[in-house]
Image (spheres, rainbow, N blue to C red):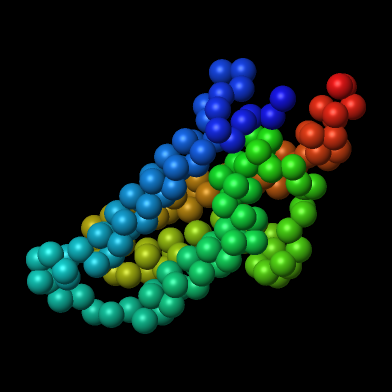
Length: 162
């Protein structure tokens, strides 16, 4: 049986609770990045030179990530397919941004993070923060590329057993 939306199945946490927690931590992480990027100027009155290319990279990256979320649907975004919440064929999304390049959510996040890192004051104060995050995103993307489901989706196999 697939992991239930509203309850536990075989000791697994309820998906909606998991989803809320993931969204909370993602929101906190983006808020922290915003603080790192704008905090000195806003809280301490320290002037920063506006880096228009950096801001454009950040906005473009998060736009692509949000478009990918919309294309997948919120339940398909946070491991909904992998956990059995969404019954969907692998590679089922054919709309933007998936029709332009693979793994747009990860690549959008990486592009936005590189935009944050492009700002001199971020690189100076947090030299390893963005490179480590980008490396971890690339490792995750590599895992998705090479650990791909090659057979029928999980729900087809489970229906054959019944």
